[in-house]
Image (cartoon, rainbow, N blue to C red; front, top):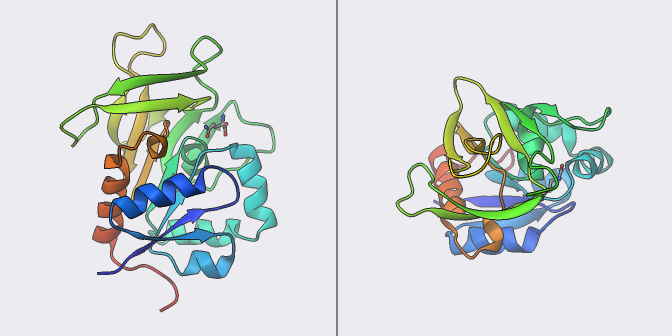
Length: 208
Ligand SMILES: NC(=O)CC[C@H](N)C(=O)O
């Protein structure tokens, strides 16, 4: 079954995500136009600045269509700013910041604070045999997750409070989100997980 996964290409490290998805066996396409969004079976929302991506989604007339497609079951993987965009609730956002929503979580933007603003950690990740080396860049964490949300990874217990134990990777149906950036480490297991999610969902493109 041929599936095509789009990478939202308004801001962020689009090339790295496409490379990781292709290594994981998917065909990929950059998404900037509504017609491109209609033609994908899954979508990656890369990191960047969630406030900027929110504005660009409206300028590029992608926001309403993307919300509709998420509500209709489009598989989406959001990394960092992408996680913020998928969240139903945001703490620490700007007053006019909107999200796409779909993921029943409350995220806190720029949650780790100045001391550990950007850092790396080895995380055990549900379903993966070996830990994931996670790179966090002004990352959000998940402060609260609804009942239908599967927690895939947390900050290990060795970190000081309140960082220890914070949720940094989740799945809810066809939505996957991580606080960190697996696309830059050369470890494609998170992208492989998302490719499996897209394959399980089957072709969902609006157009033939
Ligand atoms: N690396 C990232 O994607 C950073 C996210 C950014 N701090 C935001 O709030 O949108």
